[in-house]
Amino acid sequence: MSTATPQADIRHGAWLWLALSLLLGLPSACMGWVPLDQPVASWPSWAQQLALHPDRGLHQPAWAWWTAAWLHGSAQHLYRNLGALALIAAMGWSARVSVQSALIWFLAWPATQIGMLGQPLHTYIGLSGVLHAGVGVIALHQLGNSDTRSHRIMGYLLAAGLILKILMENPWQHALIKPPGSDINVAPWAHLSGALSAAFICLFASVTNRLPSVKRLTRGRRTLI
Image (cartoon, rainbow, N blue to C red; front, side, top):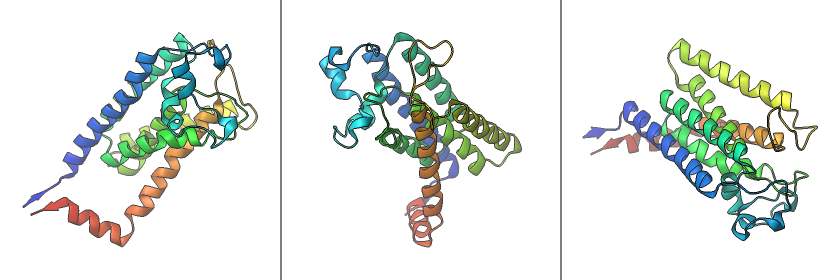
């Protein structure tokens, strides 16, 4: 009889987190960037089909909920997001996130884009919303699964920093803002959507894990005869 240990879950979760980081980063790096300051009609045809159009609501290909994250509007936009992605990948590895946390980030990827639907924007592209979701997942993982005080403090700091950043961007008042040093406008609602997607999926997973039937199923899967 063999039993799946918490250490094995942590190891698998960390590797799954890195794999998801690569799934977000490699296509982004390969696709490069499109001229966000020009009409979408002037973009390459393949890029036009991958972008998300929030003002169209559900009247667009479902794959845009994933592929929009791979497109960027300038070289600076791409390199900054890839740098942030590398940092988040390292943070998740260092925090030894669980398999569940990695899966929550994966689910928050399309949920972030779905949360953009209905915004007064014709086109949205970029990784930033999904990156904010990743930070939220790490923060909640540190708060809910860490036994050490230092890890919990890190979770509080990450959560507080994320909330403060979103509040300062004021997504309720501005559809687009141009941060200092940025060469393109960004959509603050995407950052809010990413953070909320991570929070709601984490909450759903936490509630579900407390159901008696789920606990019995989990125990049954952990023990292999």
